[in-house]
Image (cartoon, chains in turn blue, orange):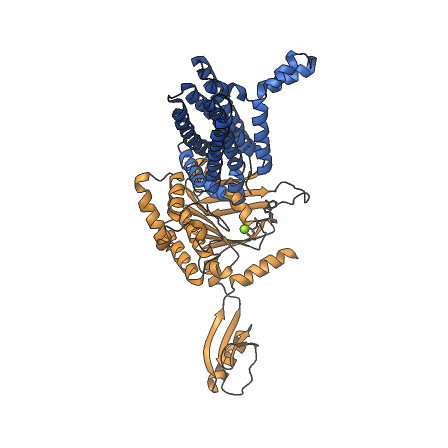
Amino acid sequence: MRKFIPIAQNTYRESLRSKVLYSLLLFAALLVGASIFFGSVTIGDQVKVIKDFGLFAISLFTVTYIIISGASLFHKEISRKTLHTLLARPVSRWEFLFGKFAGLLLTASVMLLLMSLGLTLLSIAFEGTLSIPLLMCFYSIFLELIIICAAVIFFSSIVVTPMLIGLFTFSLYLAGRSASLLLYLIDNEFVTGFGASILKGIYAALPHLEMLNTVNEAVYNVPQSATHLAWSTLYAGGYALVLLLLSRIAFESREFS
Amino acid sequence: MSEHDAALTIKSLSYRYKSNWAGPSKPALKDVTLTVERGEIFGFLGQSGSGKTTTIKCILNLLNITQGTIQIFSIPHTQHDARARVGYLPERPYFYDHLRVRELLEMYGRLSGIPSTKLTERIDTALEQVSLNDNMKAPLHSLSKGQTQRVAMAQAIVSRPELLILDEPFSGLDPLGRKQFKDLLFDFKKKGTSVFLSSHILEDIQNLCDHVSIMSEGTIKRTLSLRELSNSSSGSFELILQKKSSEKYEGKETALPGDSRVSLVYENEQIAQRELQKALAHDDVVEAYHVLHPTLEELFVETVKGSDA
Ligand SMILES: Nc1ncnc2c1ncn2[C@@H]1O[C@H](COP(=O)(O)OP(=O)(O)OP(=O)(O)O)[C@@H](O)[C@H]1O
Ligand SMILES: [Mg+2]
């Protein structure tokens, strides 16, 4: 199982040596810069605007990175046949898959770390104190990234075209962020009977990313409860694990011609 | 060592690619059976599209076989332990653009399970064996075709495998490079490594391999030992002359490069001898007189054409 490490390392290294990562970091910095400007012309609490904007930027750009880079992760290895020389070695397909997941997550996490550091320093500069709910929110974003990484790996293992992989992952992300809309439809009896059961099923299957969206708590400085933290950790880990295991099943029998 | 302890055994392997938009596929491999003994160099010949690469992908478990069996040192080919003993050089190799040569070999070495204490030494040796010492720091995308081919060989041998599976190892190499690769393969053979290589460049195979299989349209048409080939006679004789006189000779005449040099071929030994005496009696210089062995090329053409009929 240890052989996933060189594969993860290689994936990480490839990201560090590509331009995508740096362009996205630059964009994120620009966006936060803009938020300082908007914050200063808004009536009210400037730091709230900065946090809101900043957290939005961090989540957007890390997820965008995972989708852009993740969608072609397998495709590049398959079309250039670099995968063949990997799998011709005593390496299992699961190790390859998990290595890719780990490498992608590592890159996204480093990106998250850098941007979080920037936003934290900015908020300290404006507030004078370190905001714990802000740190907790970074952690929630990290959990979200775990799920998105697993999702992109999952779609990569069942679909070949990068465009579709990206589209599916992005759709899952959007659907996960608005999953409670389904509950709203059911609770207000817009949909009843069999239709409602189907919607409930879809709701259960979608990742509950809203649970991991704690931007409001961070902006209004309300710490998350320990149970919420624990529960969301378990949820994200479990959800990602299920996706990875499903990917494994699909990838195990794939042919590489 | 039992009789079945061969390096590679393929029995009754058939394979068909999945149909695609271009229509249903025809079988790419039909009932392929072959054995590569330990310590031998085995040549896998065939025209383009005859199924060489497909066979190799089946061996490496990149394609799922439904018919037949493949064993590597008597281990089923789907097992980890089987692939741990194999080094593979792909056709048209391509590697990661973002890596340097050494970084690539480090990754591959670790994936092959080389302990980290031995990694540096193994990589140095492999680079030396393929004469790439100066390019260690170069990014892979900056390498020429021949250099990439050398990297491909280095990654195949870095784990010191017992069986090398090489898909057209000589392509992209200059004559010197081909010579170096051949010498390298002879060295490996001396150390007991088994080699299975595909090619359609027959000159490369002729004096390298112990056995060859000739493949055509997904089936093996013929397997032969090259020693037998060079011991057998085609029943023809060749006389090479540098003509000084205006004497006429019998036999199938072909002009050779150089001043009035000709090759004369005879099916009949007596006529051949007579013409030889005639040449010696006149002023014509006899450059060579010898028995013709069938060449691999002739055999190949005969085999492949025969199957078309
Ligand atoms: N991915 C694929 N899908 C469908 N058919 C394929 C695929 N790859 C190869 N084939 C077909 O299988 C047959 C054998 O191809 P293969 O690549 O094994 O030939 P080869 O002997 O290696 O040829 P070459 O010497 O040109 O490399 C060919 O008819 C080819 O068109
Ligand atoms: Mg081929």
